[in-house]
Amino acid sequence: MARSGGRSQGSNTFARYWLPVLAYVGVIFYLSAQPHLQSPFGFAQGDKLAHLLEYGGLGVLLHRALRGTTDLGRPASTALVAVTIGMVIGLGDELFQRHVPGRESSAFDFFADTVGLSLAQLVALLFGR
Image (cartoon, rainbow, N blue to C red; front, side, top):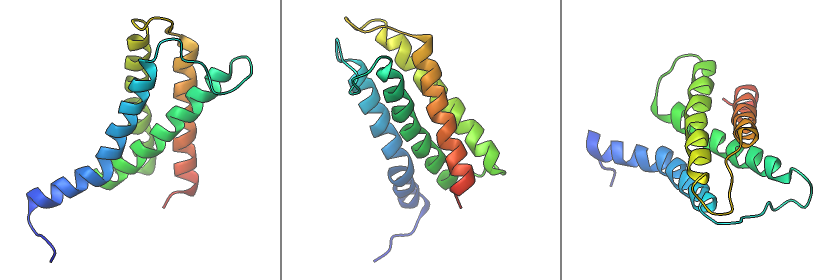
């Protein structure tokens, strides 16, 4: 039996679109809290690729959540808001890492985060509905 009503529908919408975003951000910060965490890639600057892929995934989830819960008009507006939210999360992540032993905060990591977010939006704009 389908439930009707704003509150139930709002809870379902939040769970469907924003809960995955929050869970993903939780994983990002969990990984950031690991002292001396090494890149899964065995080459110099492999951590930048890890940042790009990690934040590319976040960008996809942010785009999906924004498209499903807001009416920002043009798809480019959704992409811009997704990148902006992701950049705030990335900046918070880098500032958080400054306080984790064996981790460092890097503008280059933040740049890789932003590139990942932007590439995800480009893919969403080119191949999305």
